[in-house]
Picture (cartoon, rainbow, N blue to C red):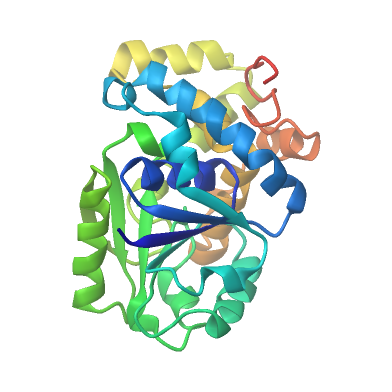
Length: 284
């Protein structure tokens, strides 16, 4: 079975690592922060237990088998033998460009790079590599092990073969790929971030509380989660960063981040990962 290098051991990176390992891949989980990597085995074990309780498809997962397929590395050089690299670092163009420039010395000619980004252009990031035809967007939905859809994003130079390989990779993870063209936010996040931002504005303007806003989406529209619950799950800092990217790219005021969102991020209220966002969460 092939090896997948997962860069970034945050919310999405850990979910991607578990999903790949649960489907038989050997995984190298990389992060520049040694404290994050040190905590990752504990976090991953807790996540496997959670997903087993949440999904019949994951009920048979064995934590020791999954975690046994995952190893950890702070040095990007350890990814040199990977067949796929899935990048999940912070939603910041400059940080991503630095990473992709560094990957020039790591990636061989055949490695495929999947950009798991919310809003940043696949074409811009591919331009930092010597083989942009091997770079494709694979936007996994959160939480990755539970949702069957992945948005496969074709950059300007992405080859047909890379698209085919990406679709096969997504299928091997038990998911369905939907291929779209590169444009900031693609389809899912141009829509979802408008929902989340406007929901935050409703709270900001005193129209309703988070519970009322989310209840209307769940009971009125049939959504499984409300937009503010979703924002807490993603991380409010990631939501604000993504809105900033969309605003910068489109110069459209509809993507202007709600002041309440920005204030919460400044105060460290980032959602589930910090224990407090629009809702309060029990400490891990």
